[in-house]
Image (cartoon, rainbow, N blue to C red; front, side, top):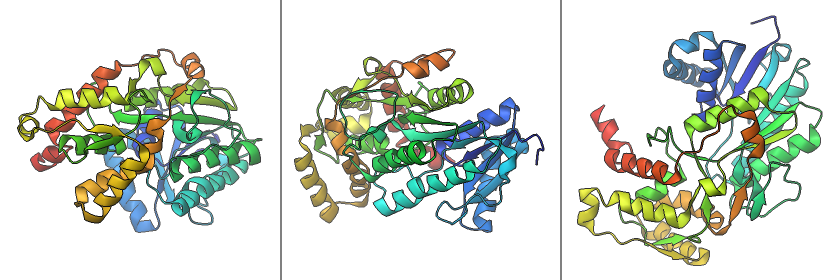
Length: 370
């Protein structure tokens, strides 16, 4: 280990954004980089370490891979706190349908264990918590880059867990040099639409493409906030390098730069119509409905529907209340720390993502070809 006490610790380094941020740090070669992976035992750690090294390529040679379980009493016991000058906490369960107990154990209690470890890092200069723009819950109107003091209502336990992990940091560990990075929904690698990881956004489009959903919950005019992985990593890196202590940054675009729910459905059907299989099925565009009607539909499908429908709806239902909640995220602080801030055309981004999903059949054709 380095004796300079200038190592950056990235938790959740095997995750979608964590691994990309790890690559950025490793390629810059400015600091010793400790990559922490979720692993319940040594065999799992070895397996995940090998997979991450392969994914990172040559850059992995400069990485110090460690691991642990956020549900364990001391998940960071094998890391010397005296070595660490910066921490980026990305480790979390990020599914909207996560159960409350798991969200509490991993996202809240696990974060507190990280904060306690950070309190012992005497040379700590920065602790960044990767959060979500939906830590604001069902609040409407302008959402500023500020602490969410009053507890809002939430769509799901994931949102609650991110709000609670922010609250614990700001109230119980305020002496730490903290910052909060609230990230929007990542829908593609770049504006060209390539997709390497699927989430509720992609699952919803899959149901639409195969004609498995006749109703969509929400208000057509509700804005949706999408980013690319490239933008998210650029923004995260900029905030980490130039952001202020106790700064909160929205890793997202503005309402004017974003698409509405109605725009998403219209764009998706317009692009899917270019696919011959989709045209042959003569699928009708779904109708918008209220939340209660959608839940009744989902309950019926849960009892009698197929696995693909249950799986898809399982990721939509917990997020459905957000589709009625109009909010406008401020990102002025983020813009100030980025050398170049540029939002892709939202319609073009979604069009390209839809084209990629349809042409690869949600990655299945790529897997078959391999």
